[in-house]
Length: 107
Image (cartoon, rainbow, N blue to C red; front, side, top):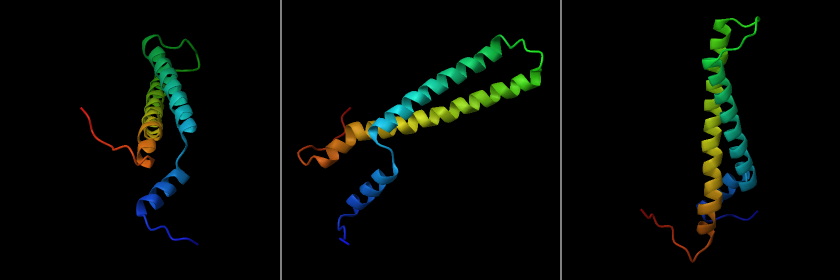
């Protein structure tokens, strides 16, 4: 077994082994955006128009609205996480492996 002397290579290799690739991160971001949109629209419909079903009373609709907003928030976290992973793989990682480029902050 070969020893890796550079700890950055070990950490980056382990991180890449457990994290998703760019295509999966983009797919996760897009599906999560769709999920956030649909849940917010459905919850807003319950807020403003209500549902005319005899089986659902007002307390059940309030619980459903709250659950939809919580689920939309969870999907929002996936949008942020997967979007950051996709941006890292698209923008930062190629610069890290190219010795001719320097990472500089520009405003």
